[in-house]
Length: 79
Image (cartoon, rainbow, N blue to C red; front, side, top):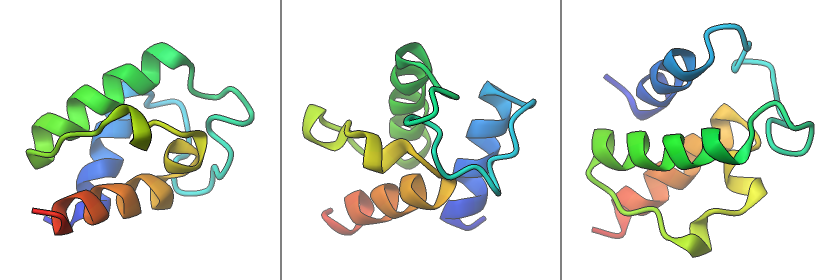
């Protein structure tokens, strides 16, 4: 399974009512709240065996499916 698809599955489990394929301002438009971000950090960390640090927890990394996928891929490349 590719990274983007796995991230999408995690997002859809969290909020099946949101179209993550088209939404580009998940944080800026308050579609996701801080609790959602904490949950995502935990779920993404477990799924990909990565550590998402406080420095990674900026709106730009969580505003869209593509941004989250890029963050995960960058963290995977560090190891």
